[in-house]
Length: 231
Image: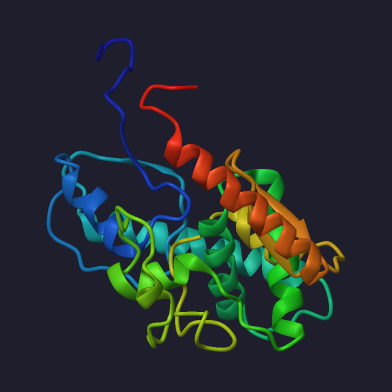
Protein backbone atom coordinates (compact mmCIF):
# COMPACT_ATOMS: atom_id res chain seq x y z
CA UNK A 1 0.00 0.00 0.00
CA UNK A 2 2.88 2.36 0.76
CA UNK A 3 4.55 1.61 -2.61
CA UNK A 4 1.26 2.27 -4.41
CA UNK A 5 0.71 5.53 -2.54
CA UNK A 6 -2.50 4.32 -0.91
CA UNK A 7 -3.56 5.54 2.50
CA UNK A 8 -6.44 5.09 4.86
CA UNK A 9 -8.98 7.89 4.54
CA UNK A 10 -10.91 9.00 7.61
CA UNK A 11 -14.09 11.04 7.35
CA UNK A 12 -16.62 12.83 9.50
CA UNK A 13 -20.10 13.40 8.06
CA UNK A 14 -22.34 16.19 9.34
CA UNK A 15 -25.87 15.76 7.92
CA UNK A 16 -27.95 18.79 6.97
CA UNK A 17 -30.08 20.00 9.86
CA UNK A 18 -27.89 18.60 12.64
CA UNK A 19 -27.91 20.87 15.72
CA UNK A 20 -24.56 21.99 17.10
CA UNK A 21 -24.73 19.82 20.21
CA UNK A 22 -24.97 16.77 17.95
CA UNK A 23 -22.12 18.04 15.76
CA UNK A 24 -19.97 17.83 18.89
CA UNK A 25 -21.30 14.30 19.48
CA UNK A 26 -20.16 13.28 15.99
CA UNK A 27 -16.70 14.74 16.54
CA UNK A 28 -16.29 13.17 19.96
CA UNK A 29 -17.30 9.72 18.64
CA UNK A 30 -14.61 9.80 15.97
CA UNK A 31 -11.69 7.97 17.57
CA UNK A 32 -9.02 9.16 15.12
CA UNK A 33 -9.38 12.73 16.39
CA UNK A 34 -7.91 14.16 19.57
CA UNK A 35 -8.86 16.74 22.19
CA UNK A 36 -12.22 18.04 23.23
CA UNK A 37 -14.45 20.73 21.79
CA UNK A 38 -17.41 22.82 22.89
CA UNK A 39 -20.59 23.31 20.90
CA UNK A 40 -20.20 26.08 18.29
CA UNK A 41 -22.87 28.73 17.75
CA UNK A 42 -25.99 27.21 16.20
CA UNK A 43 -25.99 27.54 12.41
CA UNK A 44 -22.24 28.11 12.12
CA UNK A 45 -21.25 24.67 10.75
CA UNK A 46 -21.39 23.62 7.10
CA UNK A 47 -23.04 20.19 6.83
CA UNK A 48 -21.05 17.90 4.54
CA UNK A 49 -18.44 15.12 4.68
CA UNK A 50 -14.98 16.18 5.82
CA UNK A 51 -11.78 14.22 5.42
CA UNK A 52 -9.76 14.18 8.64
CA UNK A 53 -6.31 12.94 9.61
CA UNK A 54 -5.47 10.62 12.45
CA UNK A 55 -4.33 12.69 15.41
CA UNK A 56 -5.93 15.90 14.11
CA UNK A 57 -7.60 17.88 16.85
CA UNK A 58 -11.36 18.13 17.02
CA UNK A 59 -11.01 21.88 17.44
CA UNK A 60 -9.14 22.13 14.13
CA UNK A 61 -11.79 20.09 12.32
CA UNK A 62 -14.58 22.17 13.80
CA UNK A 63 -12.78 25.33 12.71
CA UNK A 64 -12.72 24.01 9.12
CA UNK A 65 -16.44 23.23 9.33
CA UNK A 66 -17.22 26.74 10.52
CA UNK A 67 -15.02 28.36 7.88
CA UNK A 68 -16.80 26.36 5.19
CA UNK A 69 -20.15 27.77 6.37
CA UNK A 70 -18.80 31.32 6.58
CA UNK A 71 -17.43 31.03 3.03
CA UNK A 72 -20.72 29.59 1.73
CA UNK A 73 -22.85 32.34 3.26
CA UNK A 74 -20.45 34.97 1.88
CA UNK A 75 -20.85 33.39 -1.57
CA UNK A 76 -24.66 33.17 -1.50
CA UNK A 77 -25.64 36.38 0.29
CA UNK A 78 -24.81 38.76 -2.62
CA UNK A 79 -26.99 36.61 -4.94
CA UNK A 80 -30.13 37.01 -2.83
CA UNK A 81 -33.37 38.19 -4.38
CA UNK A 82 -34.82 41.57 -3.55
CA UNK A 83 -37.62 42.26 -1.09
CA UNK A 84 -36.67 39.75 1.57
CA UNK A 85 -38.04 40.39 5.09
CA UNK A 86 -34.60 40.23 6.70
CA UNK A 87 -31.45 42.29 6.31
CA UNK A 88 -28.49 40.23 7.51
CA UNK A 89 -26.83 36.93 6.56
CA UNK A 90 -27.35 35.74 10.12
CA UNK A 91 -31.12 36.11 9.75
CA UNK A 92 -30.98 34.19 6.46
CA UNK A 93 -29.18 31.31 8.21
CA UNK A 94 -31.78 31.44 10.97
CA UNK A 95 -34.69 31.04 8.56
CA UNK A 96 -32.80 28.43 6.51
CA UNK A 97 -32.38 26.31 9.64
CA UNK A 98 -36.16 26.25 10.09
CA UNK A 99 -36.72 25.35 6.43
CA UNK A 100 -34.13 22.59 6.78
CA UNK A 101 -35.94 21.05 9.74
CA UNK A 102 -39.42 21.36 8.21
CA UNK A 103 -38.88 19.05 5.24
CA UNK A 104 -36.52 16.36 4.02
CA UNK A 105 -37.80 16.70 0.46
CA UNK A 106 -35.48 18.76 -1.71
CA UNK A 107 -38.24 19.98 -4.02
CA UNK A 108 -40.22 21.39 -1.08
CA UNK A 109 -37.49 23.61 0.35
CA UNK A 110 -38.03 26.61 -1.99
CA UNK A 111 -41.79 26.39 -1.52
CA UNK A 112 -41.59 26.28 2.27
CA UNK A 113 -39.00 29.08 2.25
CA UNK A 114 -41.35 31.23 0.17
CA UNK A 115 -44.24 30.42 2.51
CA UNK A 116 -42.29 31.48 5.61
CA UNK A 117 -41.13 34.64 3.85
CA UNK A 118 -44.79 35.43 3.11
CA UNK A 119 -45.67 34.93 6.78
CA UNK A 120 -42.88 37.25 7.91
CA UNK A 121 -43.90 39.90 5.41
CA UNK A 122 -47.53 39.72 6.55
CA UNK A 123 -46.65 39.89 10.25
CA UNK A 124 -47.82 36.34 10.90
CA UNK A 125 -46.18 33.92 13.32
CA UNK A 126 -44.03 31.27 11.66
CA UNK A 127 -45.70 28.48 13.69
CA UNK A 128 -42.95 25.93 13.04
CA UNK A 129 -42.99 22.75 15.16
CA UNK A 130 -39.17 22.29 15.04
CA UNK A 131 -38.74 25.62 16.83
CA UNK A 132 -40.80 24.29 19.73
CA UNK A 133 -38.62 21.17 19.90
CA UNK A 134 -35.43 23.24 19.88
CA UNK A 135 -36.68 25.20 22.87
CA UNK A 136 -37.16 21.91 24.74
CA UNK A 137 -34.16 19.78 23.69
CA UNK A 138 -31.76 22.11 21.83
CA UNK A 139 -32.60 20.20 18.69
CA UNK A 140 -32.18 16.63 19.86
CA UNK A 141 -35.03 14.32 18.76
CA UNK A 142 -37.99 14.56 21.09
CA UNK A 143 -38.89 10.90 20.65
CA UNK A 144 -42.63 11.58 20.74
CA UNK A 145 -45.24 13.96 19.46
CA UNK A 146 -45.61 17.48 20.76
CA UNK A 147 -48.01 18.07 23.63
CA UNK A 148 -50.57 20.87 23.59
CA UNK A 149 -48.89 22.38 26.64
CA UNK A 150 -45.59 22.55 24.71
CA UNK A 151 -47.20 24.23 21.70
CA UNK A 152 -48.48 26.95 24.04
CA UNK A 153 -45.29 27.18 26.12
CA UNK A 154 -43.60 30.58 26.28
CA UNK A 155 -39.99 29.92 25.26
CA UNK A 156 -37.80 32.26 23.19
CA UNK A 157 -37.85 29.71 20.35
CA UNK A 158 -41.54 28.86 20.18
CA UNK A 159 -42.73 30.49 16.96
CA UNK A 160 -46.32 29.64 17.84
CA UNK A 161 -45.91 32.24 20.59
CA UNK A 162 -43.28 34.71 19.39
CA UNK A 163 -43.41 36.83 16.24
CA UNK A 164 -40.52 36.85 13.79
CA UNK A 165 -37.45 34.66 13.91
CA UNK A 166 -36.21 32.87 17.03
CA UNK A 167 -33.11 34.31 18.74
CA UNK A 168 -30.71 31.89 16.98
CA UNK A 169 -30.88 29.24 14.28
CA UNK A 170 -32.27 25.88 15.40
CA UNK A 171 -29.84 23.71 13.42
CA UNK A 172 -27.04 23.87 10.87
CA UNK A 173 -28.65 24.30 7.45
CA UNK A 174 -27.11 23.02 4.24
CA UNK A 175 -26.49 24.80 0.97
CA UNK A 176 -29.88 23.89 -0.55
CA UNK A 177 -31.83 25.34 2.38
CA UNK A 178 -29.79 28.55 2.29
CA UNK A 179 -30.30 28.89 -1.45
CA UNK A 180 -34.03 28.25 -1.00
CA UNK A 181 -34.32 31.11 1.49
CA UNK A 182 -32.19 33.58 -0.46
CA UNK A 183 -33.76 32.87 -3.87
CA UNK A 184 -37.27 31.81 -2.89
CA UNK A 185 -39.74 31.88 -5.81
CA UNK A 186 -42.78 34.18 -5.91
CA UNK A 187 -45.65 32.63 -3.99
CA UNK A 188 -48.94 33.50 -2.31
CA UNK A 189 -49.03 30.37 -0.13
CA UNK A 190 -49.06 30.82 3.65
CA UNK A 191 -50.35 27.46 4.93
CA UNK A 192 -49.05 23.88 4.80
CA UNK A 193 -49.66 20.58 6.54
CA UNK A 194 -48.37 17.02 6.24
CA UNK A 195 -49.93 14.91 3.47
CA UNK A 196 -49.19 11.44 4.82
CA UNK A 197 -46.47 10.63 2.27
CA UNK A 198 -43.57 12.42 3.94
CA UNK A 199 -44.37 15.66 2.14
CA UNK A 200 -46.84 18.49 2.57
CA UNK A 201 -49.89 20.01 0.93
CA UNK A 202 -49.97 23.81 0.57
CA UNK A 203 -52.69 26.43 0.52
CA UNK A 204 -53.19 30.15 0.06
CA UNK A 205 -56.64 30.40 1.62
CA UNK A 206 -57.48 29.40 5.19
CA UNK A 207 -60.60 27.48 4.14
CA UNK A 208 -58.49 25.28 1.87
CA UNK A 209 -55.98 24.80 4.65
CA UNK A 210 -58.71 23.67 7.05
CA UNK A 211 -59.78 21.02 4.56
CA UNK A 212 -56.17 19.90 4.17
CA UNK A 213 -55.79 19.66 7.94
CA UNK A 214 -59.01 17.64 8.20
CA UNK A 215 -57.65 15.22 5.60
CA UNK A 216 -54.38 14.89 7.53
CA UNK A 217 -56.32 14.13 10.73
CA UNK A 218 -58.17 11.36 8.88
CA UNK A 219 -54.85 9.92 7.73
CA UNK A 220 -53.53 10.07 11.31
CA UNK A 221 -56.56 8.17 12.59
CA UNK A 222 -56.21 5.54 9.87
CA UNK A 223 -52.54 5.09 10.65
CA UNK A 224 -53.23 4.76 14.36
CA UNK A 225 -55.93 2.15 13.71
CA UNK A 226 -53.84 0.08 11.28
CA UNK A 227 -52.61 -3.24 12.76
CA UNK A 228 -48.87 -3.60 13.38
CA UNK A 229 -47.15 -4.78 10.22
CA UNK A 230 -50.21 -3.87 8.14
CA UNK A 231 -49.99 -2.12 4.82
